[in-house]
Amino acid sequence: MMDIYKEYERKLKEPNEAVKVIKPGDWIDYGWTATAPAALDIALAKRLKDLININIRGGNLLSEPEIFKLEDAKNHFTWNSWHIGSIERKAIDRGFVYYAPIRYSELPRYYRDSTCPPQVAMFQVAPMDEHGYFNFGPSASHMNACCQTADTIIVEVNKNMPRCLGGFENGIHISEVDMIVEGSDPPIATVTSELTTEIDKAVAKLIVEDVPNGACLQLGIGGMPNAVGSLIAESDLKDLGIHTEMYVDSFVDMANAGKINGSKKNIDRYRQTYAFAAGTQRLYDFLDNNPECMIAPVDYTNDIRTISSIDNFISINSAIEVDLFGQVNSESLGIRHISGSGGQLDFVLGAYLSKGGKSFICCSSTFKTKSGEIKSRVLPSLAQGTIITDTRTSVHYLVTEYGKVNLKGLSTWQISEAVISVAHPDFREKLIKEADKMKIWRRSNK
Image 1: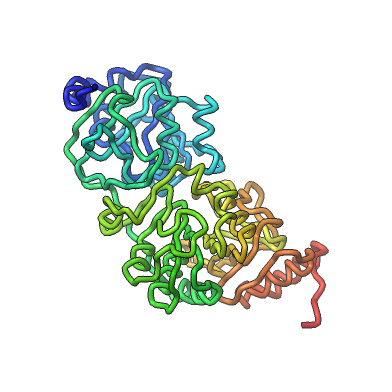
Image 2: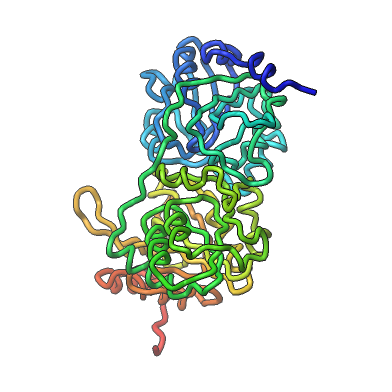
């Protein structure tokens, strides 16, 4: 029988020693969101000056890695992101950050099908338990698949990492680990919830009135989904369930308000199911060793078949722009990259297939540019180079502060009329003229 503590001592290395395994041309995996390495990142930044053609994968960074701070970063490595966050977005113009377009639900398979096996996987974990397991913290996501295909696995132990329970693919045994590093136990990177505006509250109110008791919720990232969560926490709703890609602070609000018990879920009853979490320290404290919360791999949480099997599934996600064909962009401003596909389309499709399910795409009707100009988020057609996240056949409900419309089953003229009806009044006449030119306008007799 393996003595896990002797094995731990045998595999324990200093960070500078551990990163010596990395060679020119290697593909390195940096974990996901809150579990990106810290001490190993510092050690690699020192070593990168002597290396070229290093490819690194990660995504949704919550703090800037040391390797990003190298003045000539692009001469040494390329960062390949599964999902662009604000830190990566700012670095795109420096020439070393690129997005990898994915359906997030498929990500584990990309690794297992050998599309992208890493030579080295290195990431932060919770301390080893008495059975020899290192927990992946709030980032189960695709990490088990990554570890299964990596040539070398280096775990960086952090005593502050929450231990997120689940049941499968939420940790790795010491027998599968090649090296262990103990860093300085930095605080886990947090993300502050966006401030909720009056527009967010107006949109949230329109959505919450369609949420029944016993519904199962998925919330995307952003002010509007957060506003929905806050409003639900203050509502009379009860017996709600959670099945989501990303666990956010508003779920903690709802749980503390007694709105969540999962008693009506068809699967994973009484459990709050999620693939990864990012938020405040309060969120990490809530998840730590909490048996009510179930972290699971993303090919389970985001699988359309899983989502559609849950009755009264309510999916709520944000958009950047929508056009008069009903196409939704949640990823770019023209060719300027903003975010990523994530699991939005999977939840849009899965929620509609759910018995009693609904999916909501929400956005403010306008936005203000840096110069102070007010622009419409509702456009005649999306600009050249704009990424379509949800096709015109996929969108169920579209919601702005001016209303809520169901786009399913409508003709092109009905879709354009419905979309214009929730646009800002100042832009409606111009949108009507454009729709007429596009041969998708026929005013109804409503």
